[in-house]
Length: 73
Image (cartoon, rainbow, N blue to C red; front, top):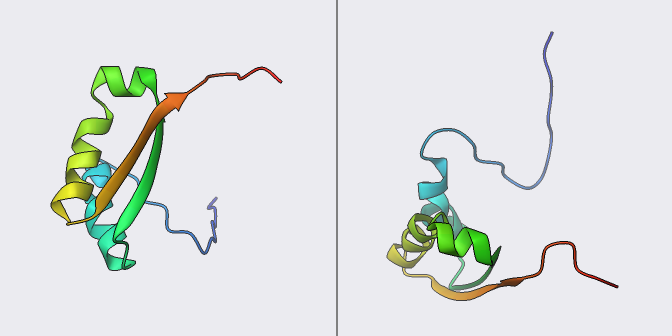
């Protein structure tokens, strides 16, 4: 049995794939991005290597890490 996933949006997965984020964004011609993540991701350090990859690709980052989980109405 097999699956087919078709999407116009690229999906990267696998070991080390997050570190390719900057290269991929650069390939799209991105110069500046908005990066949205939660406080726990920030405090855990999970975002740091990805943000470094983006920054190393010469792309300006506008971070927003004030996401509220399960926001109220």
